[in-house]
Structures are given as structure tokens and as C-alpha cells.
Length: 238
Ligand code: HEC
Image (cartoon, rainbow, N blue to C red; front, top):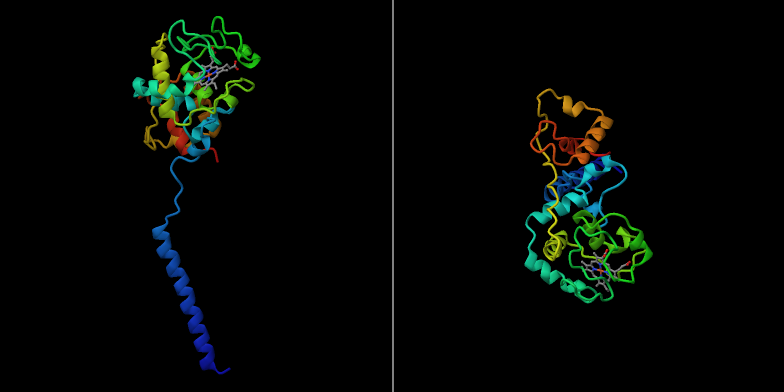
């Protein structure tokens, strides 16, 4: 092969490389591959993101926060419509009969598994402690089977938080009237609130300790200077 042939081959190779590079640049614009700001929200899904490790909640919104927010503009009349899914097995009027499931009049705030005269509770529900808070009801209605393993309510769950919020507003109106769940502390976007850079430099365990504090008193830091939730976004769990 003479040098002229080689030149042609190199020429083609060069052209091919430029074409590949160019394509990469063009498609890079067309399909930007950026990390979303909040990772992992979708992964929380209906089963919730609440885990043993408070630090893990950093990545997304907890179910409790999600329903607290959704409850703020819940619509009772839509909730009455959602309740049709429950009405095959539950009445909700005062003194209504028990069907396959217990009468649900006044169920919000009622002790779990305590409807008077309902004889068919599973032992799972009977042994479940506490009362029907919005948070507990939300976990149960989102996914009855995983929320209280062993309970026998044959219902798949309602996946949309807004539908659940409407439903809970309706349930709450039928003989309960629990106060709405507290709104979660706002997540601030200020990168360096005190201008010292100290926030960003904090060790992870400090952040986690703060998060735990924040969860213990969820409303105490609204608008407050420390607003620990902002650390969540700056230091996502790996
Ligand atoms: C197929 C029938 C069925 C449907 C549909 C159904 N439930 Fe139930 N529900 C039951 C049964 C049965 C139980 C008792 C479960 C147990 O003891 O394990 C129950 C229990 C409950 C409890 C616990 C009551 C208590 O006294 O602690 C609540 C709350 C509840 N259901 C709400 C709902 C809501 C809200 C819907 C609609 C979104 C719904 N259920 C749909 C059958 C049903």
C-alpha cells in the first residue's frame, strides 16, 4: 500500500471519529443526563420511605409528610366518592351495621381493632396497639397488607396520596374530627444560611442527630435558623 492509500485510510478514520464526537455532543444536548435534585423520591413509593435510620429519610419525603401536605387541601366530597371502594365491606353511618369489615363511624382517633360488637377482627389487628391517626391510617390504606401484616382486609390499597387525603377528610368528618396532621418543616434552599460555610462542612452524624431532633419536634423549626432539613439535600446519603 502506498502512502496515498494510508492517507485515505487515516482520513476516513479521522472523519469517523469526528462524526462520533459530534453525535455525542448533539445527543448530549437533546438528552441531558443530569442527576435530579432529589434522589430517590420515587423509590419511596407507596410502602413509604420511613426506615429505622432517620438519615435515610433525607432522600425523599416521608409518608407522614406526604399525607400531611396532601391533607391541607383535601376534598371531603371527593372523599365520599372514594369511600365507595370501601362501602362493600364497611358502613360509616353512626350505629351502622358491621359488614365484612367493622362500622367506621368515628374511626379516626379510635383505638385500632376496637369497634364495639365486631367479632371478626384478625388477631393481627386486635394485637396492633395505638389508635387510628392520619399517619397510621395512611400507611394502612396505602398498603393494608404491608402496614399490618396478617390483617385480613381484602383490599389492595389506594395508591394516590391525594385520593387517600380526600378519603381521610371524609372519614374524619364522620364522627371523628381529629386535628389535621402538622405540616412538615419547610425545606430551605439557601446553601449557606449563615455565610460561614459551616453548614456544608458539618459531619454527617451531626446532620443525622439534627434530623432526629427535627423529627422529634417536627414543627419547632419552621422558619427557624437551623432548619435542619436543608442539610438533607446537601448531604444525600451517598
Ligand atoms: C373486601 C372488604 C373490604 C374492603 C373493600 C375494605 N375493607 Fe376495611 N376492613 C375489612 C375487614 C375484613 C377488616 C378487618 C380486618 C382485620 O381484622 O384484620 C377491615 C378493617 C378496616 C379498618 C380497621 C378498623 C378498626 O376498627 O380498627 C379500617 C380503618 C378499614 N378497614 C378501612 C377501610 C377503608 C377506608 C376502605 C376503603 C378504602 C376499606 N377498609 C375497604 C374489609 C374491607
